Each structure stands twice: as structure tokens, then as C-alpha cells.
Length: 312
Image 1 (tube, rainbow, N blue to C red):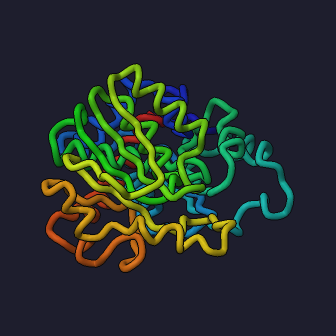
Image 2: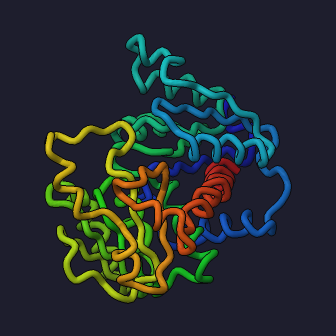
């Protein structure tokens, strides 16, 4: 049965709104510990983890598969056509079956949060959201790990996020706003901003922690003192734009050298994959201030932290 590893009291990582600030900080410290070689051993020895990806993935799927193996777990991989969900079985029945056999399930559905919460509606199998339509919580964990490794702290950091208010932006807003003195400036195209409920929630976290979350729909008067400039690709996995002329709205939000140089000391972040010449220029992505590929590597360490935190 599920729950053979650890104490059987399963945690889920479905939304960062479910994780309190202390535990979020602990997850980041665990990730850094794995990155720096301070956490060793195979704490998930004997566990079985399902890796279910309905949509394409390079970094997240590789990170979680490698992370599970390095922690001593065995993995079962499922592609988009492998489960009876395709033939009409309910998500609830799927969860009941899987939870009797698996200790954890890492799921990229690009679907609703309701679907993921239905998978998590049991007590013996941890569920980790590897990207839903609304939120990409493990990406934010990798982002915070990257910032912590680069700057030695999260408190007081300033980030300029440019582009769509997508699942990556949602997770970043829900995460960074927890830490005192942080400032997140979002510049999103009109009609493609943060989900309104998420924006309210993130600003609530910011009010409690002494942080700032500010969103504008233009590229005028960019902040001049940020520590990192962050963008994501314009065409998010599993989504389509309702407006056929959406590229015209997004064009002013490209991160080029002028945008990066608005804060001369800023590093550049990108969750990848990148489309050079669209959301970012090659000069920026491949330039000396880009740490996007370090950020990608940190997905492994954050995946290790998430798996241990959830399952052990």
C-alpha cells in the first residue's frame, strides 16, 4: 500500500498558498543544502514515486525523476496516454487506486487545481504539482533557491518580472511576497496579468511581511535598482491566447539589453525553454549576467527538497 516510506503522514505541494512561510523557508534551505552537498543519503529508500506528465517537459520531468532516484526511491513514469483517465475513469477513482500503490505522485496536468486537489484527497500518497494552468509551485521553489544561492538571502531582494502573468508568475508572487522587505515588480501586458485572486493574496502576504507586490501593464519607468530581471516564454505550455493579435501586445515586453541595463547589477532569470528573439534577446540570455541555466539546475535540488518534505 501507499505510505510504506516514512511515517505515512503525507504532505502535498499543490499550491504555495497551502504552505506556511516557515515551511516555505525550510524548503528553500533544504534545496540549498542539497545543492551544496550538505544533505546526503537516501531518505526515500523503499518509496515508489509516480511521474505523470500530460504535457511536454524537459527540466521538471528530468529534475523529479533524477531527484527521486538520488533520494533512493523507485519511479514509474506515465505519459499522456497511459492512464485510464483517457477512457473515462474519474480522477477520484484514479486517486483511490494510485494512493494504494504509490508513496508520491508528481503530476504535470496543465489543468485545473481542482483536479490536483482531487488527486490529493487521500492520506497515503503525496501529490506534487509539477505545473497546473494556474500555478507552478516547484518553479518558484527553484527560483527562490537560485536567488538564495546567488545573494545569500531572500529578505530585501528586488525582482522585476516582465511578461505574462502565467503559472510561473503566480507562484513567484505567492512565494517571494512572504519574505520581509522583498519587492516584486510585475510588468504584464494588458489582459494577461496575474489572476486577480492571486494578486490579492500575494499583496496580503506582502502586507504581513513588509514586502511589496506591484503590477503595471506598461514598460515605462522601470525600477532602477532590482537584483534580478525575470521573464518567461510568451506561449506557456498547454495554453492558447484568445486574442489572435496577442504578439502585438507582448512585443514591448521583450527583455533586451536596455531592459537589463535599467538595473546595472541585476542578474537575468528565465524558467526555460526560451525563444530567443521573442521574450528575450540572445544577447541577454547568453550574456554574462544570465544565470538561467544555473536556475534550471536548481530545479533538481528543489525537486529533491519537495520530494523529501512531502514523502519522508
